[in-house]
Image (cartoon, rainbow, N blue to C red; front, side, top):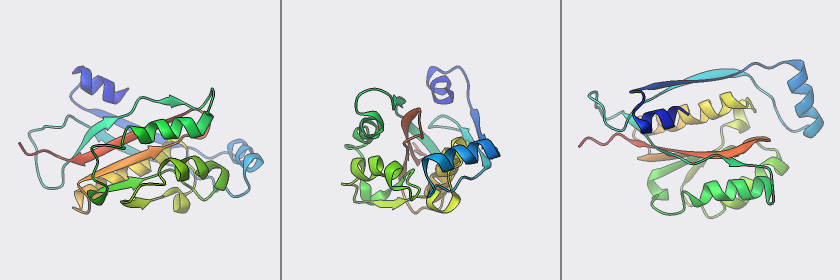
Length: 181
């Protein structure tokens, strides 16, 4: 929604706060689906702004695009949804200068869709949930902050965040270095 508001010119900036509080009910529900899943809690905040601003430096990162959300329900389910997100980034991205920050977490039946969809990815790849655990919305915030930091530090020109979702929808985000034009 924040990206839509920016695109429509309704706002100049959007602060997106993503948080997740762990409780026994959520943890127990995850255990019923997977004994391998590590459940986590936390929060992050990401300030989104337009691709051109008055404050420009070598560490500035901009939001290049966000895919439309793809529901996990229906024919093809999670695999089809993640493959559709992947298709958005098949062309026009140089894997050599782009970091893929995916949603794999070390749970084979949940990771399978990303493994298949991104099997041809030849660039750098990082899976933070393997270390942080699954924190639902907060996890996507962590992925985004990590991707932005990698660009700020000059390691990559772009980053793709692949968020396959647990049971609702898949989505992709692409960040890039601020254009100094």
